[in-house]
Length: 328
Ligand code: MTE
Image (tube, rainbow, N blue to C red; front, side, top):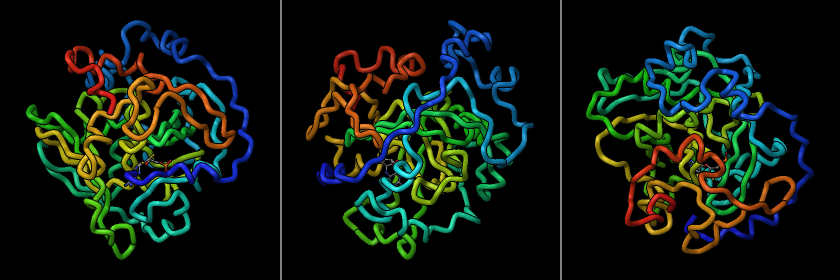
């Protein structure tokens, strides 16, 4: 992303699929009895007890998973072929057109390490991990790349909070660091040694257990294609897309703020927080509006990508002397 990417916007685009009309999220919260309280105020134990996180449900699959009507996207779905062929996955090259090359990634078996400040470090296969995390659900989220393109996608997966609960972090853990696989024989981009491979991202534990943070295993009602980050990827829709790390192979709980891949390359342009804000420009381009994949329409960008009701409380009182710090 240090490279200017505007020329990629010249890709052919097709018309959008009209979105169904879904129940408004606030209506859903009221129906579910959470009006006013917000999920952020509900402890993890209470979420298990209340059935919001149900570890006893079916394990991996089937696809499509039941849709969680609390998360409906709020705009037309991006056509599937756009979202699965216009992808950022630098391990396979810096162009958006890497989806064929990414098929070389073997995701079954897929070893996942959970370590650092946890009660018991563990290495297990992704399928076994998912069996432990309970049933899959589908959520439609808006996605906003820092390059100012955006999409609206139905993801399948589980709340990241379930993985945190499964890992049992110790009291001193403050952050979750996530790391992608490292195998230059499969991913030619990883032969480019000016990049700090493997790709790393991080969240605070409060962010990782926010209701929106999602560990995705699929997209458009099907298992995740390699190019979108199979078999496990993060989706944090209130942050710029680079935070949503693909093909995660390691989750490390730590008391040190992780330094992400892009932050290592260029901390002035890609910070740790990276929350979406139309009023805080990237040093090289405005963030005021975004181009929708599919229709090509340009629409205004919203603070926290429109998810402020869910996440603004995470940041209350932080950086009182630097109002921009959370947004780059
Ligand atoms: N994860 C890894 N491992 N490698 C990457 O290059 N690119 C990021 C993010 N996750 C990236 C990654 C960026 S910049 C974006 S915008 C999103 O993935 C794109 O997700 P998508 O290709 O599924 O739209």
